[in-house]
Length: 333
Image (tube, rainbow, N blue to C red; front, side, top):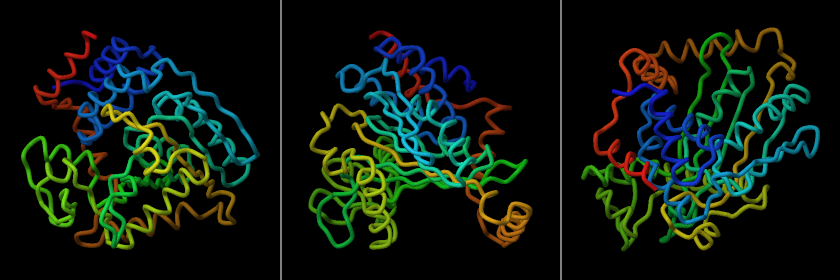
C-alpha cells in the first residue's frame, strides 16, 4: 500500500529524472495520485510510460511556463507552451473563477497543452468554489462516427460539476466513446474482454477483444448517433473555438511516441448566484439530488470516487507490483 503523498513523490521523481522541472512534475504528481486515490487506475500510474515517452522524444516541454491572459471580461486564455495540461490548468483556475464570479459566466481556453488525465480532477476544485463547471477536451482519432467505418473523433471526454454547499460537489466525467480508451487498454493488458459495442477490429467488425480494438481497430461512440453528435460538439468547442487541432489533425501531426498529442481544452464556469435565484438555488437543487438518491437503484455520480478516497485515506492505495516496477525504471533516465 502507498499513501497519496508517496505516489506524488514517485511521479515527481520519475518526471524530473526525465526532463521535467519541479513545478511541472509536482502538478502532474497531484493529478496522477488523485486518480489512484479515487480508484481511476486507467488515468493514474498506468499512464506514466506515455508521459515519459513524450518527454524523452522532446514532444513535450517538461519545463514549460504557462501564461494566463484575460482576453475579455469573461474569457481567459491559457497558453501551456507545449507543456502538460495540469500546471496550465492550475495557473488559470483562479482567473476563471474570478471571471465567473464577476460576470455570472466565464470560459477558459487552454491551448498548446498535452492533456492525458481525468477531467474531474480539474472540475472538482471549481465546483468546490461554488461554481457550476464543465470541461471538454479532444484526443487523436479513436472513435468511429455513427454510420462511418473509420475513426475520426477523439474519445472526447466531458465533465460536469455541480456545487453542493458544504458537501462534496456532484461531478461526472465520461468519454463520448462507449468506454474510455484507458479502460480498454487495461482490459487488453490483463487479457480481459470488453462488452459488445465497445469497439471494432481492423476490419470494422464488432469485437469483445480489447487487444483487437487497440491494434488497428477503433472505439464506438456511446448511444450510437447520440454519442456521435456529442463527440462532434466537443470537437467544435475544443478545436473550433481555440484554433488547436481537431482529433483527425492531431492524428496526423502527432509523433505517436505513446504520449498525449498537442491540443486544447475548453472549460466553462457559471456562478449560480447570478441567475435570479441566489437565495434558494442550493436548497432547491439539494431537494432534487436527495429525491434522486432516494430512488431504489439510482446512482449519484461521484459517490464511488468519494468512497474510494475515504478508504484510501485510512488503508492506503494499492498499486500493482508490475506498475510500481515499471515506474521505478523511469528513475534511471
